[in-house]
Length: 251
Image 1 (spheres, rainbow, N blue to C red):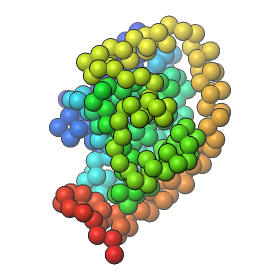
Image 2: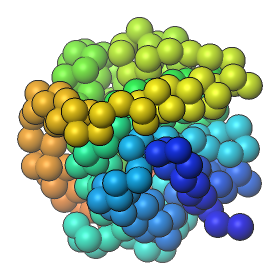
Image 3: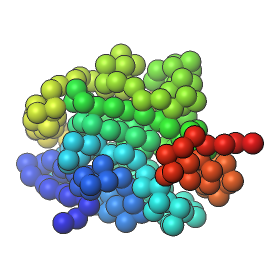
């Protein structure tokens, strides 16, 4: 079965992360499938709303680090950057239903979603610096704008996990539901949006996004630093230590 599942019904495209044995960690091939799905949805009049969710009690644990080391992104047209570009420019409403872990891109992608609902088990984190990397998905621009510089610095520099209650308090999450009701609640909202006038929704989203600054420029600068750091001795030590379950040594 595919690591990314897509189903379409009643105007809703549901995209499901489906690699539960790895807590839905994302590989280069998964990013390519995600980018293809988002690009196709943007021009498909039958798709009114996009809903992201994850199977197996996790949203996504972020990048599959081993796959990232084996297939490092080399340029702007590699699958991960195609996905980030697609999610940042999507013209149709996007909803996320987040339960379990949402690590790295599992949290930064939420900044591009229009509505975010979390299960009580949700555990968000942005551990880029801890892996000797830098933020991506324009999160270094969008997060401070959303939560303020000091809160954004706490989340990005310390890289510690935070609760759905904190995410709701910061405005990253709209509402929190019991895990067994989360998908139904998010789907109900998607169904409401799917019945609304599509052009008005698209234009309203476009107007809302005008306030978010130069997302493309920020993503390009982040990507340059990310690719450079991924090749660095710092990152090799941080990621090796992660796999070996030991504290990294930066001397």
